[in-house]
Length: 61
Image (cartoon, rainbow, N blue to C red; front, side, top):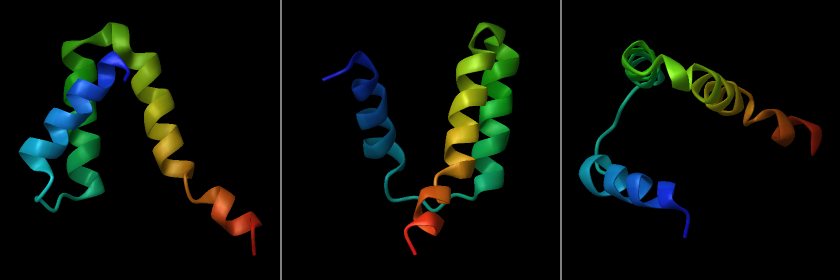
């Protein structure tokens, strides 16, 4: 188990039943980077990964 798994598990436990929009997630990521600018690059990479996650599905057809 990675250290980050604890945070992911907490997120799932606290918010797992909620429906949220991508706009809500994007705003929360912006707020996080504003408060923690040293994480700008990893958050950018994560957001790009999420945005492009379905690209692999298109090539399998």
